[in-house]
Amino acid sequence: QKEVEQNSGPLSVPEGAIASLNCTYSDRGSQSFFWYRQYSGKSPELIMFIYSNGDKEDGRFTAQLNKASQYVSLLIRDSQPSDSATYLCAGGGAGNKLTFGGGTRVLVKP
Amino acid sequence: EAGVTQFPSHSVIEKGQTVTLRCDPISGHDNLYWYRRVMGKEIKFLLHFVKESKQDESGMPNNRFLAERTGGTYSTLKVQPAELEDSGVYFCASSQRGDPEQFFGPGTRLTVL
Image 1 (cartoon, rainbow over the protein chains, first blue to last red):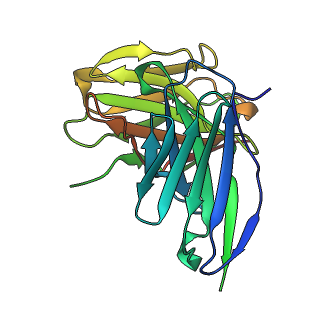
Image 2: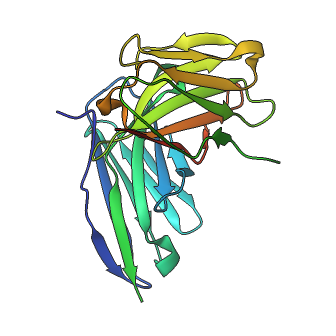
């Protein structure tokens, strides 16, 4: 079993719709979770991170964490073509080393 | 402010040769991380420096990999001798002390033939 699992996609959403991405993790010791966006051939860039159970909102993005279910999600509201990218979920461990999932590819169609 | 830079952007070498990758973190960032993505797999942690000290090298695959961060500034990752399975994209990331946000460099794509 992988430590962090994501559906590889592609997740196809129409422009203006909500994209919903999911991630599950196996290490109950993970305390922090990160969502990175990676455009093809580029470096990962942090969208947001979350430590506490519940929701955290930042602009069009909302991260949700449920530690009991070992589940993290990312919602992208009002999806734009520029949101088309691979979204990486990562758990933070000791020293903040990141354990990544394989990523979910998102395609936003105009 | 300059971001994390990595050199070279691409490297193609033959099996058995030596390659050295370089990472320049954002100025003032004490934490420096190396990660690697091999084809079809997720990005995996290699090691973590705090200034010039290795904090965690649990992800280093074997003793063919040697990382250094002399003076606590830039870091190098040497692969000697390179094997076919070392091919992939090597990312460097840095962060300030106490800050969870890691800034990633553009990566070095290594191809071992």
